[in-house]
Length: 114
Length: 110
Image (cartoon, rainbow over all chains, first blue to last red; front, side, top):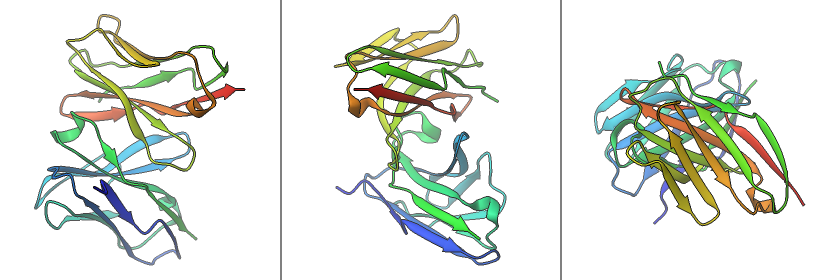
């Protein structure tokens, strides 16, 4: 039982490049999330998905797109990376909707945009 | 939206002493209150949570107390150990969303 798996663990991009962060969970959870974590800012929600094919914007969605491919997978795409998107990105899943039950986090992706 | 604040931002304690972190919130309708621990370079992990119909919950050396009237809840760690050194995030669920505090750094001094 792997829980929530994120790839890659580290990534360096140049401004304007694109990339997709992958996330998969094996806990049969309907709800999945993408957060970013910056020093002193806590965890901020980028996008949320309640089920396959549905996504909702969170607090900081600008510059990102997401895709809920199936129940297991939820990907985050940066179309044109900017230095302000340098951050640590966490994917999470939960049994109940919108964080009304424990969140299970992946190990994170450390992204640097130069 | 929900305003979640954690105090103090940094807490240093001697090994073996107790640590208490307080989290305040603004929405009286909030009903789920988890605490997450994040060690350096690691992912956040749930350590304890409480719902609004309960005033206190314990799990070994960790406890959470909830004061709905005053709109705050606290994390209590007894007999602190070096492995308790981490950043602790509180979160509040209400109005169909989960809001995180900015975190408390706890340092346990051997």
